[in-house]
Image (tube, rainbow over all chains, first blue to last red):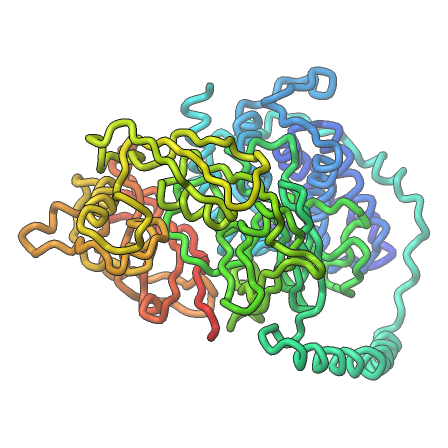
Length: 160
Length: 458
């Protein structure tokens, strides 16, 4: 259940911190699954929350906003850096702990499908929010989700 | 919906970085201004709107009227332009309605085109409500607030180019939720219009003008409702240059190869046939090799030699002959899984035309609807009976017989339909929905719908 609250000053900072404590770990793991890179994930999540802090009560739905911002920042960073996907070039310095197999499998998906399946199946974000985040129609989210699941299953069942 | 993948449970083993101190440290910008009282805010907004109405709306209306008067073929508010570069380095300009949004998308070199075809090159168009705001745009969205001022907003998020309404009955290619691309774009016939392929091989910049379809104002249809109203060489350009680039014909059925060569200003003069006894086998008429190679620059009108295994017909004549019908019918029957239950109930003419002839105008569909006693022979199209679901627009429920067309594969859960097409009442109007069905036996579940079809506005 994702409950958005309207933040008002002066409790804003505390509310954001509460939001971070409550959803930050899930968001971090979701972005990590999408980006496959710890430094990009750290940057995206930190920047998203920092911008949420800076915007004060201008953001009506902080939870949805911060998820959207984090994913878009991560995607922008990936795009800018042209970073290889984790399955292609694991970064031992950046990811000291072994990555779950599913992250490698996710890397085989196109970015949109990766984002959709992570946000929906792992993070349990609502389809409308995913559609808004990715700038696509809700029906398209469902199609991507279906295709992503199918490909993920295939990859996980038959890792090559 | 199926259950979430259990593999995701393992993600919880990842240890997130504690970023809170970093987040607070980043907060170096100016403190947010103290909240303005509600009544004052409303007053300011009203005044601002009044000024905007006078300063912006009136000139826009005047400009729009002038533009419409110049080109009645264009959508009323067409005017914005986006520019992209094709994979061949050819500039492409896109003109689209002012309330739509476009963003350049270039296929990242790091992606595998086989698996990442969802992130195709192209111009993404949608209406403003669905689109990501441009970096410099301030949409004044007080709901989500402006996005981070990132000049490199992630184009890969919005991954498909929708410029056309040409039916696309097969979704067996690379995954793509809306399987249309520039190459599929059709154009309303008109003076000076050229085919995209023609422009590309000629190497001339061109301009694509799109207009909204009848439902373009519906945000949920944003990505699927653009109609190409013209494709023309850029001003001062001429598609009839002396040299053209040889298109890649390998893998194309011979009829398509001939068409592609013709569109490029070339001819297919020599067709080497390796084994005509293979006639009717899948891919027998696909081009195996070509000379000159794709990408070679040759004089317009030059000839190309190709090799095929078998030749389905003696020449590129558009005339219908029974042999060709037989080949195409065999291709369709090849897709049939005889294990599936069901009967052939309907063959959509567009579908038949596309699948059977790959766009070639055969003149008529092969007669696939067998008599009752023989229907088991052709079970590709399966009557699933009435299915009720929320339609692609989310505005109503549709109950209609479902026609399924999709590969049926063996899976641990039994026979499984991997995709399909529903041809409901709108079929008769020339419009179709793509419906993805997943399930087995009678337990099919509609997991996605998309209006990937459309109809020309005449």
